[in-house]
Amino acid sequence: MLPADAQAVSPKETRKRPLVVMQSVSKVFSSGTVALSNMSLTVESGEFVSLLGPSGCGKSTALRIIAGLGDVTSGTIDWPSSRINSRGLPEGDIGFVFQEPTLMPWKNVFDNVHLPLRLRRVPKAAAHDQIIEVLTTVGLQDFAKAYPRELSGGMKMRVSIARALVTKPKLLLMDEPFAALDEITRQKLNDDVLRLWKATGITVIFVTHSVFESAYLSNRIVVMKARPGRVHADVPLITSLERDAHYRTSEEYRKACETVSHSLIGAINSAGDH
Ligand SMILES: Nc1ncnc2c1ncn2[C@@H]1O[C@H](COP(=O)(O)OP(=O)(O)OP(=O)(O)O)[C@@H](O)[C@H]1O
Image 1 (tube, rainbow, N blue to C red):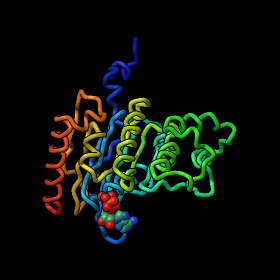
Image 2 (tube, rainbow, N blue to C red):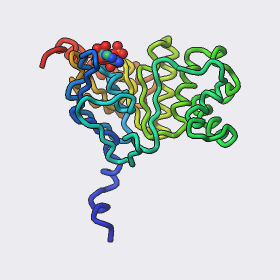
Image 3 (cartoon, protein in one colour):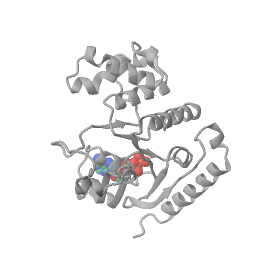
């Protein structure tokens, strides 16, 4: 007979288990700025969630708090399906991709990607296969010896993604990673991230200003509003269509963009209302 707790969880429910639960989180900086007020958000394993909202609505603050890069003023962050380490973060790590690639210019691509493993005292030789594997995943296997100055903006961002993935995290947090790139490169990287997400089953929380980007990538968009930052709407985006070049010109994508755009306008118009 199964133990009682095993009986209580069907396989479907196991898949749907929350990975991270933010409950009534508020963040007030020492300047007095209320960046977040009573923000609640549950993200389940395997979701691709975008946080979308106007500048200053607290998207980056929320992401940094989830990553353990900042503390909360009140409220809680829980990881119901993970073992927690001494820093209050889930074991198995979190990958973080910033808006800037933040590579070390004096190190080559291989060494830049090695960094998170080096911090865990994994020597280069032992990490070799893992690093080449993740570079292959982002299409940079032939650039392991190149230096950041020899790479395009899109390639540098791929290195940054490889560095975030090299520890095989369960959760990938991306803070407007492609905002500084040209449209074509951005679309290519959007496709790469989607491919990675599908291949690995990783959970992604993606911060963006772009309605079009969020509607292309996500299966759920959390629209935020400002003054103070909080959730305005939670928009599920379910489609049977493959997210590819055809999807970008489909009626379904156009409708998704329209729905999300209306929600964002509502968030902007009601900012400051309580
Ligand atoms: N370290 C900090 N100290 C004081 N105020 C801060 C700090 N970081 C962010 N803020 C303020 O908190 C609010 C939310 O900022 P945050 O960067 O989270 O918003 P955002 O939605 O990510 O904005 P953007 O889209 O412009 O990056 C803003 O008013 C910002 O000025």
